[in-house]
Image (cartoon, rainbow, N blue to C red):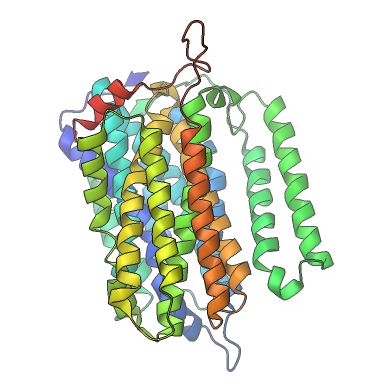
Length: 483
């Protein structure tokens, strides 16, 4: 590793890098409560955009983000994390400005994809720069704080969106511009550069494109299944394209000297199962967030502002649950806390299922259920990132974080897509909504099972850890103690 200078202002550098991660997380979720306003604004006469079309405002961003995170991580490892971070943040800020001027759903989807390119460049670079700026004993804590900022942003996004939509849905995007510009200026002045693997071959960009095509085609088939029919040629073709593109991606990955996903990383047991748990956990949370918002707006008639503040019940529980878990149970393997988070999230979904009512009853239905879900998020999100990335070598930190973030985004895309497929045209049928909450609870429990698989198996005779490289409870507890 080569570092141009040692960070002399660690606190300021940490604030800049975590601030960028927070901004990207906020933007990802701030749009949820603006769906109805965007749909009305883009209506052409009697033809309003469908829920499936509007879902691409979320899914288009997430698909591009997911596909480019890993090659972006590789590029920043090779050519310099600071340059990648600043370039990505600048593009993200400029695209946010353009999103506010979109005059149609598909124009907005295209601009959101451009936003995602910038976010994909800055996100893994921000974690790579942060870990390089911290001493080894503080890296696990740094990864947790970085992840916690994203979790809080995800929870605060709808509330912030509700306030901004009172001005105009355009401000859901324009809010990024002054913050992004300030972070760019601060990063240029204060953040030191970090470079790894300067002689490594270029990452497999063709593999990244085939991965994006595979995920996009899968999402297209799921989202459009209600309109096209599950047995239609178009739905079948979408799934065939997804499968063929996935096979092409695997073939390219085997032959390329610098594949999108380095197979060696998946020999780390905690990393492999951590990413599976991440995909499932985020699928559950993303679907829960959108379903709660749609129910309050479409079934109860809540405004964007009312919905935003209703969802704001969850954010206070996120840091409280995370910090208390670190203080009280930091001696446990993070897989136990992640599994607990999945169970708590599922309990919140079950509560919302059981208490579902077409009559507005926020304080007895959504409020307690969303508070429980917030606690589950606080247990799950930070520990997922810490467990999956804390044991990777610094030279692969940006790439590893890219894979972990890809799992987050793919999980979100699949969760939202399956939810849209279950709901069809909306939340008019309470029985369908109940089945959607069943799906959310089951997915959260599946993430708990995957989290428990992170724990290493020991041989009876020697007690040796199979698969190696797992963080022990003591080292992660030491990392937690720095928070």
